[in-house]
Each structure stands twice: as C-alpha cells, then as structure tokens.
Length: 357
Image 1 (tube, rainbow, N blue to C red):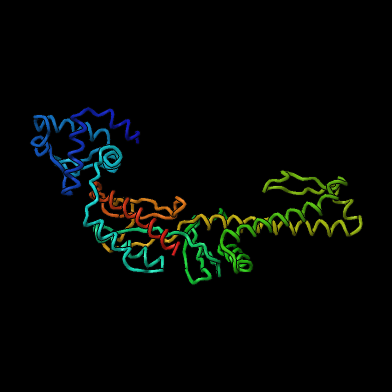
Image 2: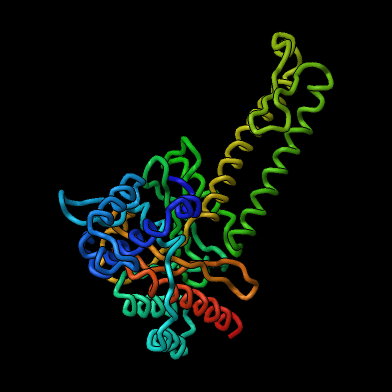
C-alpha cells in the first residue's frame, strides 16, 4: 500500500471530494453511494458521468470498490485507512458522552478490575460497539505460575498473585518447546517464586545463570590450561568445551573424567536455566488480559471490523494499558475517536488516583 499522505496529495480536488463524500455517505448509511446522488451534492456542478469516471479512477487506485454491477461504490479497507489518516474531522466530545464517562469515577471502588469493567461498560453503551480494555499488568508477588500450550507458536501463562489476583497472558514460546518442557519450567520457577515479583524472579534467574557459568569456567580452566580441552564459540549461547586426546584422559586418573562429567552436567543445567529465563522474559512481555464488553461483536476479527484504540498512561507517563472500541468498519469515526481518546485519559487519571489512595 502506498503512503497515505503521498497518495492523498496525488488526488486532485475533485477526486478528493468524490472520495470523501463516498466514504462519509457509506459511514452514514451503510449503503453504496451512486454517481447520480453524488453529482447533486458536489461543490461544483458536474455530471453523473464525470463523477462515475472519477469513481472508476479511485477504484483503480484501490480506494473504492463496487459490490454489485451497476451499483454505487463503497470504500475499501485501504480507502478507510486513507480517510481516517488524512481526511477525518473529529467532532468535539458531546457533553452527554463526557458526563456518562465521568460518572464511572463516582463509585468509590478500590478494585481495579471493577473500575475497568465499569469504564468498559460505559464505553460500550455510549458507542453501541464492543469495548476492549487492556488492563495494566499486576506487580504483586507471585504465588504460582503455569504455562499452557495453545499452538506451536502460542502459549498462555497463568499468573496467580499473592494478593489473589489472577492474570492470563498470551506469548510466543521459544521454538521447539513441548508441554513437558513448559511443565518443567513452571515447576522450577514455582520453587523459587514465593514472595517475588516477576521482575525479581527474572533477576534471580539471571543470578542462577551467572553462577552456573562461573562454576563451569572454574572447573574447565585447568583442562583448558593443560591443553586437554578448548572452548568453541566461547561466551556465546552455543558454546561447547571440546576435549582433546580423549584416550590419554581415559588412561589418566579418574578425577579428570569426573571433572568432565560434572562440566557436562553443569552445561545441561545452564541450558535449561537459559531456556527457562527466556520463557520468563517472554511471559513478562506477553499481552495482558483483554476484557470484552458488548455482545453485538462476537467475532473479534480484522475482516469486516474496526478497532479504535488508545493507550493510557500512569502518573509517570508510562503506557500501562489501552482502551478501545470494536465495531463494523462503518463506525462513526469522527465521534468514536474523541470518545476513546477521552476515555484513555480518564482511565489514566483514575488509576493514578487509585494508586495514591
């Protein structure tokens, strides 16, 4: 797809007006817009045939489509994107909408989930669309972790926090992971999780990996210095200790063989811990739980649907979540955009006050 600004600048005034009126007509009625209808409302007097020719050019550019032969035109997904990015005129937030959203602050609820549910319900009611709220990630100490494989490239981590909060996050696991390796990772993390947040748990894993690395270095140093072994890819994750003169070693005192066995065992342990650390990092970055409110949009799909979303920030101006509205592509974007924007600001302020409470 061409750059929206560049494509828009290439359209002359007539093409731009025809395009804008087709999109606005479609968003208003949901029906294809015909050339005869347009020719009567254009700012300059033009024939239906002229408008039809312009529509054909816009269709060639991929901005419009004709759902039926001899029918009017509707905007394509690319056309809607261009309209939203370059031609949309957002209307000021209506006082009635503002009052409904502000009313969500009225109840003195100390539970963040209830606050977000209430905001989502208000957003859904005002826009007549399905609302989506991406909740901020919890930072309390972990009580229990569980990994659940969903597909080859998707997994779910279930986090149970010490304060009773439960959170699910979806992430892409490292390639080649199996349900059994996920169970092993969860068992290992649960053994050291108590009283620690995810960030503290990750710090502990880093310490464990560093300790194992130092043990390997200490044991291997004498072998390397004596010329019996050499490092390959030293310092990298694929590093190996290659043993030379194996026959001489086997004829030597059993101590050297035991040292090698211990180094091999430490290497295996180091690899497991690296895998688990990668798991933990991916789980920590994974998507938080999305709360959908509004039964009219049961299929959350990009095909035939639009999502208007805005991030919200905490008092330190750090993005901690997002709110949005899902609906058909025929959303009233000019009205929805300022509503979503105001809601995001409201949630940020609401959570800031909750944090100080």
